[in-house]
Length: 238
Image 1 (tube, rainbow, N blue to C red):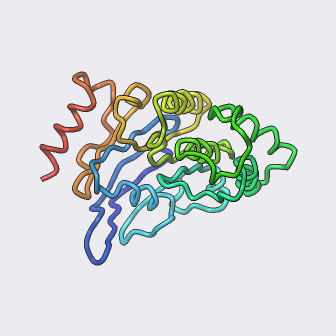
Image 2 (cartoon, one colour):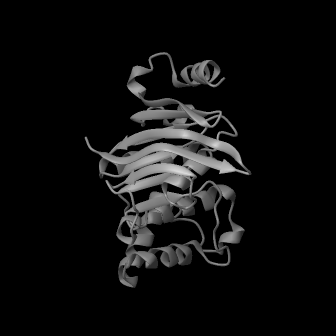
């Protein structure tokens, strides 16, 4: 299995203070990799650094076996941020078409693709109103659909289940498994340990601005991920 993402010695400063300290980990092609953290561990900063949305002070990052993300590489990446920055004067159908147009998808293809995506995130039966009229959970589903409209090879998800009820979280888990079966590599984080423990391959844990566990196989944690997480943070963070 080859590496699709390799991160070495990423260091980031904020107001001259280190908020990331030599972060290093690697993700294999076609796996679901889970990034765990306590509050205040700067996991979103790590994720944005990988995608070149912000620039660290020190880094070596390889994505798709290249140290530079060109336009063609970016077209193979999907991203769902923790906070949904949606154009709320649009309907979700219009919003998805707007995003799909960035990937050279024809309007005829977009119509079919949008209908399919709305079914996959369980929104096909909802009214086609403007986005400002929907709940946070429904907006979360729209943003998830946006992140996979280009059928990405590498998908980054920042808290994809944060506003969802148990039914919505089940939908996300099933969708991630489906995407992974079609050769999508998934890198994501969430606080909801029990919901995703069964679908991930390996994990990393970040705490106190540094990696405390890297590349641990889920199958090797026999006593439960929640207990393991608490033990590792308590023992290694200080």
